[in-house]
Amino acid sequence: MRCPNCGERETRVVDSRDLDESATIRRRRECAACSMRFTTYERVEAARLVVVKRDGARQEFDRERLVSGLRKALTRRPVPDAAAELAADAIEAELRAAGMTEVPSSRIGAMAMEQLRGIDQIAYIRFASVYQSFEDLEDLKREVDTLFAERGEDSDIVAIDVRGTGAKRTRA
Ligand SMILES: [Zn+2]
Image (cartoon, rainbow, N blue to C red; front, side):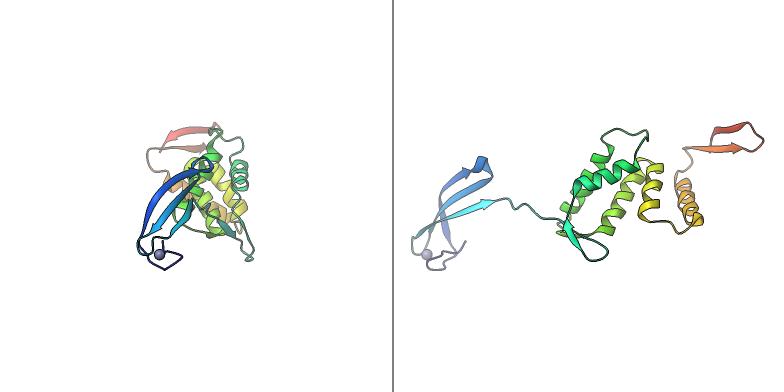
């Protein structure tokens, strides 16, 4: 911290005090060169996170809106009530950890799909069909096929018995 009087860089802290319930620290400093005393305030910067939409419009990141989008996709799926909140937390934490201040809405959409994919595949398809707006049924089928392919060998796959005994669960 440069001395406001002589420009010296070396200063000594002579007193530190918490203000605003420790949200701010007030420091009294003394210049090593001219001995002038001055005060600095240190507080955590509330980092802004701005979402850049496809049309270039910018708006403050709205966590609640993300949660409601996730919740809508997860409606009536067998997942914990907090699933949407936790997914939104994970997305926000990842964005903030990356130190981003501006993020394209498409990236948030992709992260939401990634989260849903790990939570519930039906919710993922719901969200993706709205968000990615599959061109046609073929497009949707490809995505579903990919999910099936990724389920691997140890998961249950529903097989349809075409002779009329209905669906039954079989081990793949
Ligand atoms: Zn000075």
